[in-house]
Length: 172
Image (cartoon, rainbow, N blue to C red; front, side, top):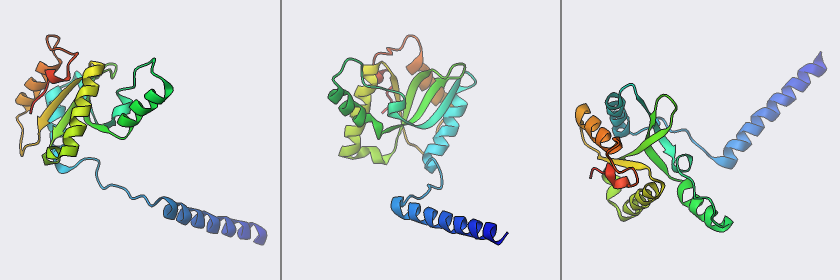
């Protein structure tokens, strides 16, 4: 019995040391929320605007939506993949029935004014355009009208819209 207690104590100490070592080695911390207040507010508006036919997902990695074209050399494919792997879309609009991707939505707040952010935005626009994926941009505001957001989305994704161009749904 004492032998069993000793084993349990040793394992407990090792487990605690292992957690402490892992924590020191990686040094991660948890974000309190997934979205900023502005992003969360806009998500609520988007949810209302898309209705029952669509579903919104937030902060989706670009590489989960786009992939480098087939037929590239291994080096070119890796370079193209690396350009998208660390980026995310603010929101992805999917058809609720099969979760097929209909469009991506970006919320442009004041952080999009810098030259680095403008280059990132331009890259995403070009990547979406080359893939035939509609990119819809909305400026960050203090408040939104659901019907206005709904109209902008509908206009961008309607069959009459040019789905081969990300500028079909641009709002700047």
